[in-house]
Length: 374
Image (cartoon, rainbow, N blue to C red; front, side):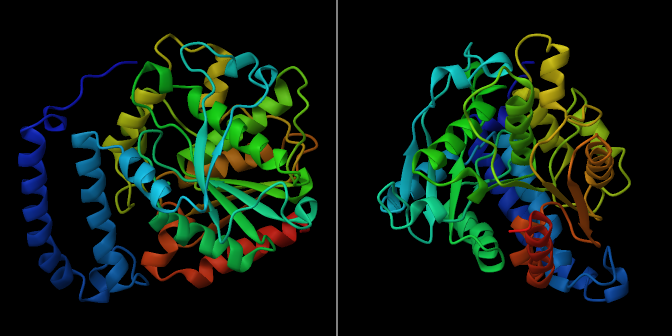
C-alpha cells in the first residue's frame, strides 16, 4: 500500500522539524530527570533512572525517524566502507532458491552487505567447517537500517560472549525505499546471506540464524520458505533465535499496537510500526500465502530446527509474541522454547547495553544454548 510521505521528510521542512525536535528533547531531559528521580514515579519501580529517561528519548528519536523518513541506510553504507577489512558482500544464491513467494517480480535478489565480528571468515580459514557462527539481522520495522558498527558491536558482543560461537556476521538487508524493496525483498536478502555463510564451507549445523524485531519476522519468513516451498538444496541451520519478533503485521499496525496495554511505556511507537507496515506490504492485495509470511501470528508451521523465541514483558508486542510462540510450540513435531524478561522494553539484544541488563541478556543466551544443545 502507498502512503504520502510527511511534509517533514522534504527540505526545508526537514531541517525545521529537526531543529524543533532537538530543542524539544533538550528541554524534555531535565524534566524527565526530575520526574523520575523518585523511584515510585518511574513506569516500573525496578527501572533505573537511566532506563526511565532513555526510553522516552528513544520514542522521540523514532518520532523523528518516522516524520523525516530517514532510513539510516547511508550510515550503514558509510560504516561498511570504514570497516572494509571486516565487510563482506553476499552474492545472490542460485535462482532456483528464490521460488514461490520469493520468486523475482518487482523485488529481485540483490547483493547484501554485512560486517564480520571479531574478524572475517573465508573459505580458506582454518577448520572452517567446524567454526560456529551466528548470522544475525537487526530490526527496524522494515524501514530503518540498524546495521551500523555501533549496533553491531552491541549485539554481537553479547552473542559471542555468551554463546559458543566464535564469529558473527551482522548483515543489513534492504529496507523499504520503493516498490522494488517491498515484500519479499528483505526475505530474499535473508536467504542470500545464509547461502553466503554456507558457501564458505561452514557446516549448517554450526550456524545459528538470529533476528530481532522486524528481522525476526524475516527470519521466520526464510524458515517458512525452506519448509513449505518446493524442495531446494539449502540445508537447515542448527537453530533459530528470535528477539522480540514482530509477528502481527497488519494494515492497522499503529492502532493494533496502541491497543496493547504494554505499549504505553515501550521504546517503540505506533506511528513507526504503521509506517513500516504501510511500506512493507506489497503494492497488490496480498494472497493468503503472502499474508502468512508478512504476519506469522495465527499462521504456525512446521519447523525442522529448534526455535528459541524471546520477548520482554514491558513491550507492546509481548502478548502477540507469546501467543505465536504457543502456536508454534503446539504444532506437531516442533521444538520451541519461549522465554521473557520481566519489565524490559522492546528488543533486549539491542536494549541491554543502555538499560544495564547484561545479566539478563547473558541468562537468555545461555538458556538458548542449552536448549539448542550447542
